[in-house]
Every structure is written in structure tokens, then in C-alpha cells.
Length: 203
Image (cartoon, rainbow, N blue to C red; front, top):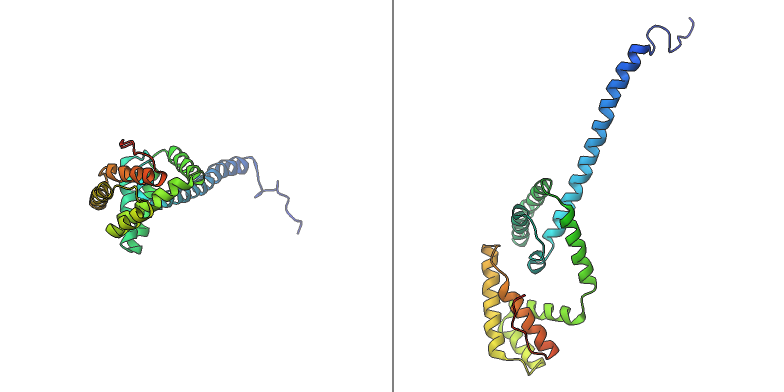
């Protein structure tokens, strides 16, 4: 039996070509669109995980949409409670929320924070380290800092540490609480380490 050619009956006649062109022109873009959507979803989830990894002080620097910020704070709360399953589900929920916002400014702000971190001076890093220690250890850290820097005003330092610690506790229950006292503590600690007067501003 002679082998059929593609233009014999049952091959690709003009109608087949039109039908198949139409079919493939629809299906291929759909497959590409699904692949692109999956890639974007993974990128947004990764961006969300980077937000969750930020310390509260750094998170405050980002102008996040309210629903994104609330989801990030909830992720951090679950992570700190070691609720791993809940934390993972919340991260995925954060990724879903971020699909509805313009993520480009958020990614740009995170990149700027990373750049800022690489350029951070030793004095700033020391001030951050001491502030964290003061908030975590209280009087023991105050005594250690005053021993290292005798010019420090112990009374003012203790008052501000107490206020900042109480503020941090309130933030754990109500994330939109201002971080003013913690910023003032950072400035006071930095002024002590650099042996310069604190400017007294909250900025």
C-alpha cells in the first residue's frame, strides 16, 4: 500500500490548518501565562518572606499597604511563637495579598534597606546592638553600658529603657503602636557611645 502524503485525504488540508492554527494560538499563550503567573507568585512569596525577616524598626521604614503590613506582623507573631504550620500558611496568605498590590516599590525599598545595611557605620551597628541589649536585659545592660561609658546619665537611660520596653510590649499586642520611644533610645545610646549630646528629636 502506498504511503499517504500529508496532503492526501486525512492529512492537513486547508480546514485542518485553520483549525489547528486557531487551537494552538489559544493554548500556547495560556500555558505561557500560567507559567508566568506561577513564577510571579513565587517571587511575591519570596518578597513576603524577606519582609517577615525584617526587624520591627526596619519594617517601620517601609510604606507598606495596611493589609500587607498586618499580614507581615502576623507572620512574625506566629514565627516567634514557633507556630510553624500557621506561620507557613500565613506566608502563603501574604503572597496572595501581595498579588493585589504594586510590589515594585516594595522590592525597591527592600533593596535600598539592604544597601543601607551594607554601608552602615560601626557606630550605628554598636548603637543598634546596645539598644537591643538594653531592651532585652534591662538594668543589667544599663549597668554594663554605664561602666563602659561613665559619662552616661543612668537615670535618663533607665527611664527611656523602661518606656521603650513598655512600647515594644504594646507593639506585640497592637502592631500599629508608634516606635517613638525606641527611636529616642537609639539616639540616646548613639550619643553616649559617641560622647556627644543627644539632639532630643524623635526622627
